[in-house]
Amino acid sequence: MLIYPSSGESGKSTFSPPHSLLSIASPLVDEFNVKIIDQRVDPDWKAKLKSYVSTQPAAIAFSAMTGLQIRYALDTAKLIREQAGNTIPLIWGGVHASMLAEQTLENEHVDIIVRGEGDISFKEIVKRRREGKSINDIPGISFKEYGKKIHNPDSKLLNLNEIGEIPWQLIDVENYINDGNLMFEPGTVKRMLDLGVTSKGCPHKCSFCYNLFFNKMYWRGMSAEKTFERFKQAVDDFDLDGIWVHDDNYFVDPKRVENVADMMIKDNMDVQWTSSGITVFTYAKMQDELKDKIVKSGCSSFRFGIESASPRILEMIDKPNTVEQVYDVNKDTLKHNISPIYSFMIGFPTETREEILETCKLAVKVKRENPHCKTHGISVYTPYPGTPLYDLAVKHGFNPPKSFEAWSNIYWGSKDVEISLCEVEREYLDNVQDISYLNSDWFNYIIPKWMSILGKPARMWFNYRWQHQMFNSSFELDLYRKMRRFMYS
Ligand code: B12
Ligand code: SF4
Image (cartoon, rainbow, N blue to C red; front, side, top):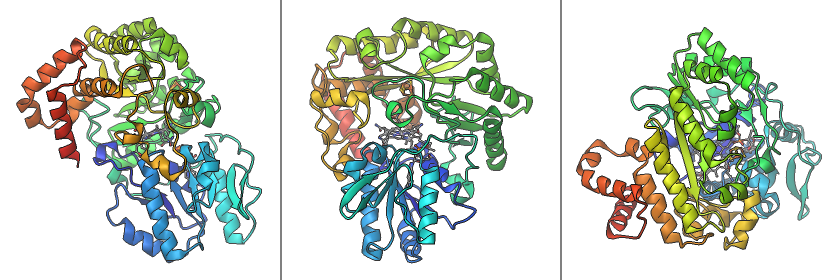
């Protein structure tokens, strides 16, 4: 039984299929009776949990990201222990448990951790459990034995051409299909589905990112044929007109990208698609013909992590591009009919007010220079364990949680992360974050029409403040926050 815990978020548009669990279930489905519970979409999950636990499954597994998912997963683990005692091993995986295996194992509700990609090791655990054999030599796992914590050597990184099909039959796919308004031009897509990843890893080493630790800077992709087949099958089976792939950096291998685009064009696949990541660096090296082909195949928006406009910060976070390249890319995308979607971050350790303002000015300027560009607001940096920047964040005031359970308090909006690691106070960072968000395309899409009309004068005022970088605290910002709390409470 595999459990994807609640994330504390509401709203179908943010729910992606539980790809981590689908991936580890894929090699199991032919031999085992696998059940997936996704607490985010299943109001009946408690009853199902009780009934599945009563069948004494060989293993119960959780996939949890840092933050609220840990809290909901631990609550669920307690329910399981109440019903079944210690008779069923509780197995954990995902980026968080992999990075902090030693601390995570200290929790009484964690029996085994599968570090890194769980596809092979997890199947091995389940098989050995069924056969009554020892699991002690399985690579990539951490476990407790007579009170001692044991961490086996890492498992090998997967060859993505060897992994099986996504076992869609284990979930109700309709729960994850949405109108794609947050990804594509609103109204142009009716049925969009997140198809997971077609490649893993990234050749860069941005110091706030999990990649260096988790994928060891090693990029690997599925073949173009396999990628195309994944797209084609999902589009046909679920009648999709929008697909989203979540690769960290889909565009690393230009030949693969070109071949997939060729196959989509040849097939007349009438679908819009986008991928989460491309760096300015990768785009700058891309041939014009390839850009046009990608657009022709249905991908007209590229998502860039710009992060900062300060050369010092870019160097500190090891971002592989310059600010000048951002302006070049912004102009070039206009030429190719591509709408770039940019994300920015502030609040890095040692960052100054001037550097923050530089980033805000860049965010305003790229939009002025390219009306097709979109922004999602500026986010305040949160340190995640296992990333190179994390140690600097600790030096500058981040108080690392002392237990697995305490990590459940590290989420957006929690008191435990509302600190400043940089040269300006937290209130200022929050003001920048909120004012940029109120002026973002994301906010434009999600705000109900009536509110957009009634709130027009307020929105004009916030736009003025954004354009002129007026980030002082004020009555109207307080009012906005009170309304937000009221609406989401
Ligand atoms: C899609 C996605 C999301 C989706 C949710 C995912 C979903 N299924 O609904 C959304 C957009 C909501 C999201 C939100 C967040 N995300 Co996110 N997300 C991703 C992303 C891009 C893809 C995840 C995915 O599907 N991967 C494909 C699958 C196949 O790989 P996988 O998840 O790693 O799973 C494999 C292994 O990890 C392992 N495994 C995982 N779970 C388990 C469980 C068991 C039992 C076993 C054996 C193995 C195992 O085996 C799997 C198969 O190989 C990843 C980056 C990435 N490319 O992976 C970030 C990532 C996971 N997210 C991350 C972060 C930081 C967040 C946020 C905390 C951001 C924020 N500040 O708000 C939030 C958390 C929200 C919340 N309230 O919980 C971080 C790290 C998380 C962490 N430290 O735990 C990542 C790695 C991005 C990054 N560059 O740093 N995210
Ligand atoms: S380019 Fe993106 S995916 Fe690659 S290391 Fe940097 S942040 Fe991570």
